[in-house]
Image (spheres, rainbow, N blue to C red):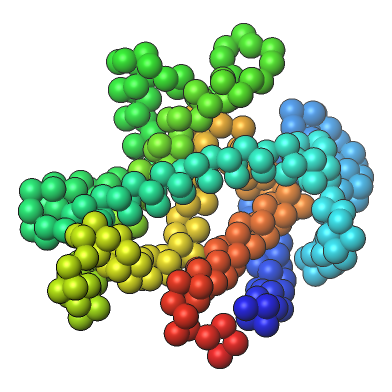
Length: 321
């Protein structure tokens, strides 16, 4: 296990380097001017000499490779630079928002895995039955539904019509303190929406895997030995049927990140989404590069986690093969 994790970590380094260089290259080709974005309204009345001096101060006058190399060497020492749009160190921008994004993603992922697994097992017991047809139809519908549309629908129903849950933010309006109760109530809708948007894939994988496992010889043998149906289903069929789903975890990380950006924006959740949007529109090189590396690292870690889980669940898989 350690050797495989080490190999994956080493192979991730050139990927991250290529991603960071790609960010700087795309930003250099962008029609947006980072100096004018940094200056804001003051740039409308500033002279060309003042703009040129600001360009030198920001390092925007340097060639593409020089700007990328300066950022990379500083990042390796822990200095990710200063965000031009946020007017604060990039490390502070990420530290203030990463925890809230991680909390939302973890809760949503838990909802998707637990609910998807439970529904998949129930549907697999009677393929083609009423529950199977109803849940499968809903799953295929949710696959085609954009996350932001689900978010707006949830706000309309739970906040506007029922008034049961807050429509956005982290705390109640007018509150000066952040309490666990307020965060929990404001987290319910975005976590449910993001989790439901990821649920169809887990449901479909578990349903198919468990349904196939119920027809295999080991499961039929367990039934022939007189084991209880619940033990056969959970102890034999579910374990075998869960193996394909484990590989799904890593592949869903990019979709989870994309969905989180949309959901955070709709619900005004104080995570990475707002910083990502502002960094992209303002061509904020340091912040945009750091956030892109962070997202890429999350995807690579998700793929590694899938392989580790698959190997732990199936002893026939060798970690060092």
